[in-house]
Length: 346
Image 1 (cartoon, one colour):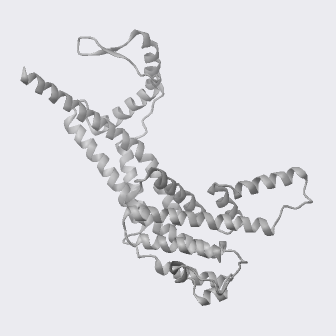
Image 2 (tube, one colour):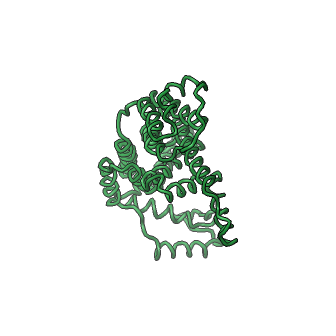
């Protein structure tokens, strides 16, 4: 029963945290659910290996390879456990896809803190529901049941006497899962709606920054020009030497590169002119709009999360480029105002 004491306690606490409908508590709930998922996947593999030892009749090299693969599954990383459970049809492809992506979100939430707040509650809720779907196929078929054992109130409320009598059968597991599902609060919106809203909001913010720069920055001739120009110079400086290029004022309203760096400068310029291609255009923003709107029609959780991650990975670098350009422009204006203020004192 220790098995159920661990996972039921964590899931009940996760459900309690999700009732707050706040990113901080939801982040902790996500971590709890992910830990429970990893535990049941690990326990599934360990039990399988216990009852299905490597055959001594196999060739030495094949036995060595099997021992090596089993060691990976029993190790600290989640992906081999997912792959193993999938290979035994204990979980579906979509469940595996969702767990892989949700685990990455968990890692970011745990190590980086305040990330993915706009979708963290819906993500943790969906992950909790997925765990309830997965548990019946992953639960051990042999456990030690002590009828006189006592549990904490958090666990006791989900493991009824009827469930104890029926464990470890599927019926007993289903009773526990049913109780856990009832503890989960009803979300205010679906994960698909949260994903769409989050990305749409970020793209709207990017467009607002582009409009601001086009209206105020005289070097930005149009939105299309600004988008291309920002990418070009971002990629140009990414190819520059680590120490950068030293530019000097020519005295005629222009600049020139330090003579000692002229060869490197020409190499980078030549590469950019011949090989560089923009990744984002005004049309790209429109395509992102359509793909974001399409998230709400994706009914398969694993595919939904995969599409969200793909979109975010495309939008985020461009989002950062535009934000940096806007910050640089604001700094330039602040410096001009400071110069005027100082000149006014003289």
